[in-house]
Structures are given as structure tokens and as C-alpha cells.
Image (cartoon, rainbow, N blue to C red; front, side, top):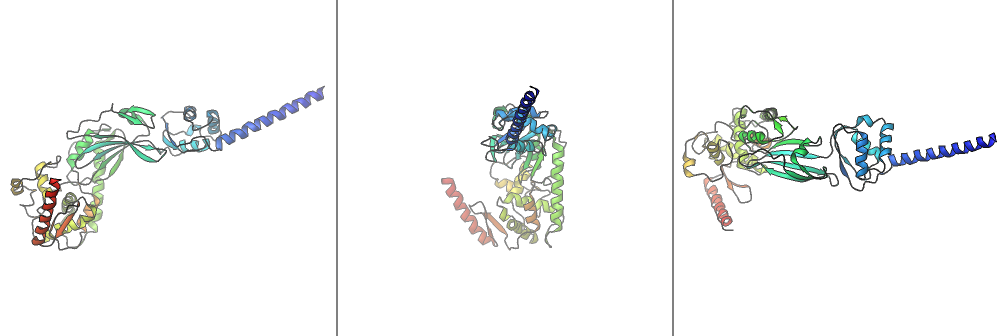
Length: 399
């Protein structure tokens, strides 16, 4: 009898062991094997979340087959306490083990919402974009033009977010740990435009005591945070421009009619405003360098416009003859040499072109109808180019 009981107990034990082994094998297969997700998703892990809440979210979204196995696997690998807040791309077919590695690694979000204050010459806007985890392409959620009067952002603005799973307010998106912030300056913006745009960005904080000197802000994209200090962002822009100018000044051509880095910035700002074609900058710079070397007036419209607007917005009309004759410090049709200050914030390419212009004998240029310019060495050649441009303007006006 005892032998039978022992035999049965042994049999039951073996069955249990086999069952446990089978469960463990199944669990390992479920944990390390290919997951059921058919298309990549962006997983939001809020601050303070647990592996339990993350596992339930993953199971609900079809990324894992069993939330219990996910939690047990995380515990087994001693990673339950290493969960990071953020937004993470979960690739199609990712195993539970892969997903745990993603959400416990660096904590750097690999998907999410990007809020970018873009400060352009003609308009300032906030662009709200989101990375589509399936295509790894940015999708535009909202484009908010701040307008001439730069009103504050509307935090109640409704946007459709894939990550949020539906319609949410702009303010809600800003609350998410996955949301990143940037301020992007276009080449040729004025310091006044930068300051006014920063003031209108509701996701930033802090007062700006004064407008930075014209030309001393480096056009670039600057990462920041929600609540980032406006004055601190301006300081970064100034420091970067100072570094750029110092570096390029050291490698400038010999014999330039520029006595200081400040004069280089001033001429670079004129070059920046005179052409939107990057390849033309060294040639445009050569025209102004040649004029300065020969004692000719620069005769450039953008300086006259700056004297009228003081960099506060766009003139929005053509120059009047009276304005071209008016003796102001910025009217280069009247004054000799450079205006007293830069007229905008030039980018690195414009500064480089100014300090290393092309070798040419050109003294004139005019628009050629393609977005670029026609250059000339003599006034006769220039007048021919001007006549051609007038014909193009007339045709465009009649279309």
C-alpha cells in the first residue's frame, strides 16, 4: 500500500515537474519570442508609472500576449525598478524582453511630440509635430501662426494625437514627459523679432530686460524645456554667435575693408538680406567688398528699410523715392561705407562668405527672375540686366 502511494506520489510529482517545466518553457518562449504587434507603436510611460500599468497598456494595445509574463520577466531580470518615463517606439514583432530593454534603458524618448517655435523673417509660428512610429516620419499636428501682434498661444487648441489616442488640447500635450521643445531662428531675423516671438511662446518663462544687439544672435535650432528661461535662451544665442564670429574672423581673407568683427557682422547682415540663394552669398559679398575698396556707396535697399522699420517687422511695401534720398544713418544710397550696426542676425554661411568672398570684379547685381541675381562689372552691363528684370516684372504683373 505504502509502495503504491509512493509510486503515485512520484508520478504526480513528475507530472507536476513536467507541467512546471512546460509552463516555464512556454513563459520563456512568450517572453523572448516574437511579439504579436503588427505595426510599430509609440508607448507613453508617464512619470510614476509601474511595470504593472505599463504591462496592462501593452496588452490592451496588442503589443504583448500576457501582461503577467511581462511583469514576471521584468522581475526576473531585475528591471522592474528601472522603468523610465518618456515615449518609446515599440517596433513591430518586438518581444517582451525587447520592450523591457527599451523602457528601462537611457530614458531618452524615441518618439513623441515636438513643439518648435519657428522665428522667420516674415512670420513667427509654433509648429507641433509628432513622430509616427510606424513610418518614423514627422506628422504635423498644428501650425499656429502667431501673427503680427504675436498673441499668446491658445492652450485649449484641440489637436489630433496618435500617441494620445485621439483629440487632446495643446496644453495636455505640453504636460507629457515625451514632449520636446525647440526655438528655431531663421537667417536674417532681427533681434526685435526674436524677443517678441519668445515673449509670445507660452511654454517659456522669465522676463527679457532688453533687446540684444542687432546681429549678435546666431540663427540655429535651440533645444529647451517647458518653462525654459527666455533670457537664458538669448544668452545661448549670443554666445554661439560670438564663437562663430571669433572663429571665422581668424580665417578671414587678407586685405578686406573691414576693421573689426563688428563690421564683419554688419556687412554679413547685408549679404544675408540681399540673397536667399546660399550659393550666391560669396559673390554678393564680393560686390560689396569691391564697392568698399573703391570708395563707392553700397546702395542697398535692405539698409534703408531697416532705417525705417528699426527691425520691428516687415515694411510690407516698396521703398519711396523720398526714402531713398533721406539722409539717415542706414541709407547707404546717401552715406559712405557701412551703416552703424548690423541690420539683422546673419547665419554662419553669410558671415563666412563675407570674410572669404569670391574673387570678382563685379560692382552691381539685380534680380534675374529665377530667385537669384544677374551680376555686372560695368554700369552699362548692369543697365541691360535691370531692363531685362523690368520686362520680367511686367510679364509677372500681367499674369
